[in-house]
Image: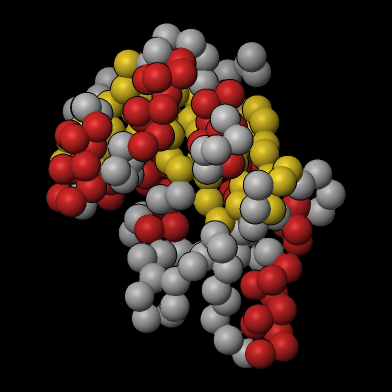
Length: 201
């Protein structure tokens, strides 16, 4: 799995064989196609970009056109083993609503996002007075799709406040795992979540 994007490799390891997966903001369907290949999942993607949808179809990925900010009312509670929100939470207008819906629909939720408080980003802000550009935040201020910027610490505080249980966390710097001070040294974080009221697996 070393040839995959590192976050994809972690997600493939997390997801159990034969699971049902809903990938929100699935992009071109690469992740879902890998999960189908390596974990035999039954996957469904939701994507708003028409070009990305066309690429999903080319890959043979089941995809629906949809806006995540409109909710997931068509899906019953716990209708998927996993709901994935990877690298798209900062792009939605109402991230709390989207995450709440994901936790309703999925038995577990995988969330991944760039860490805005990565050391490189801090240096660019503090020393150069510039909006940071990093490998996980590769856009200039004028062309970024991100509407919200958050750090690993911000997300953990949010989860405690909303009584969301963090089952596991994975922090990355490039292709390497980060274990020490991830809010400073990780440029991307992944979390496996479920509602607090349920017992950990």
